[in-house]
Image 1 (cartoon, each protein chain N blue to C red):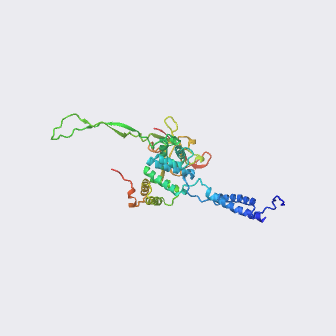
Image 2 (image 1 turned 30 degrees about the vertical axis):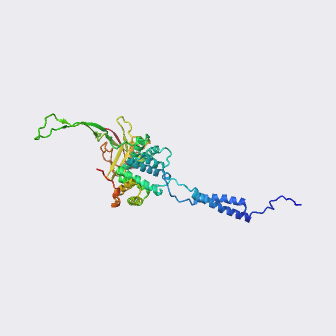
Image 3 (image 1 turned 120 degrees about the horizontal axis):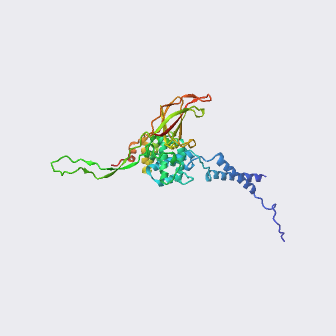
Length: 124
Length: 297
């Protein structure tokens, strides 16, 4: 009887380990119906870049702010400026930085000389 | 002489563990582990991708992609981004479907939403797709100005006399050039409102019902309607409540507030419509409602 009980307990311990590995690592819960605020940071970045490009297309600042609101940000201008500076620091795609700089400046967050190389220029 | 004896279970050496119990334990353990990992303590949500978003946030993501496309016209990039949403249909038709849903919602109540849906429409229409937004949203706000060719041939006055003799001649014409210029826009008051009628119904208290019809009395969907009051205004379109009619739109008034209704750029505003108190046929006190019909002037 004791032998059976010990075997059962050993089996339980092994099975529990396997079950947790499968449930947490191999086949973790996949979430759907998630809010945009839980997007992975790289998709949040991409979303913001797209909104910034949209701002350049329609110059609708309120619209851009409204669209960024879905990310559930505390301070949208601050977020855009920090993202812009991060993109510049990480030497990201030049065009994307231009979009972000335009939006950041539009939101009243102008980082001065840091933004200068990425500002819109009007060719003669 | 050795006696061969058949081995008996009672004579085999006994293993220190019971395999039956062990396997049973493993099975129960796996089931318990999975239950715990999936239900009681699931992994924290992280690395969420666009396809995992709820429907309305996926629509926002589509809008962002389309606004980006409106600026850079990079079709490949737009389609790649759309594919991240794992759409159930082809990505371009998916945009048409999302635009349709948004056009039916309150998303078009402001200019930002309208701009976004038009960007989506340009995208899918350019790829030969259609959607219900085509009927619900006008292609452009206000009268559509068409371009016309004007042949400009302006006579040039002869230059003033100089000391050098200038051969006299008839006025010279500049070379004929083609200049594209916008045609004269349509009259600003293409529509007029029939005198608003009032009704007093507790089920439709304080509502402005608006209808836009063409010269034959047929419904005209997708027409812009603007309601203006002291502190603000609201822009919306006819046909967004198809069950009430393709020419229908409505607006909920606040009691004791005055409103004017117009088709921006297409009609003059109505007189003030006051959300005053009225008494219905069954004696219930409620708010006056109005019915405004716009027809071509």
